[in-house]
Image (cartoon, rainbow, N blue to C red):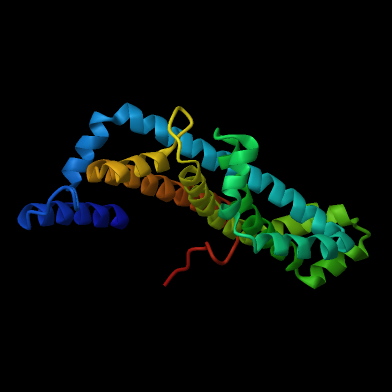
Length: 253
């Protein structure tokens, strides 16, 4: 509620400032001009928004699935962890967005390379947080499970995975935002129009044409996507943790 009121106040202040100071639209368009542009080209912007959302969601889901599976295997098999984790750390040091042109050459200018860039950027934060969570279980509980003869996979399923939820949820929130950033950067690298172009192409086109209302409209939609992704991952985190974890429990003053 407070966030909504703050946003409304900022929009009103923005509109008033543009009107009072006579700021030209080619520098900073007013919110009404941006809203008019969105309304006039609503079908076009909706199509581009869906493309960017699909790229982001597909890459993010792949990062979550493969990040969780890789973390589980790495923790259950310690020898594999000693081999794989240094390699993954070295791979993480390579800027993923820098390989976007290479992926575009290999896979074309469709959706696949953009999804892969989103996946690669979001994968490591989810993996590293999940591994840290699986390794941070209370050793007394591990000894108890070991005393009762639990196997490695039983420990993983019944002890380590539940205990790792707070770490995983942190990786989820980080990975969600990074996947959107990666999708936008991949679209910038592609720089092509057509049915597979997203909102970043609208930004580039508006920049070349110096059409500030169109540029602000695309930027507004990208910001809305980022807020929506953060809100969704935060809600998932709250659903998972609010009944038992200290970070989400309500405390009485």
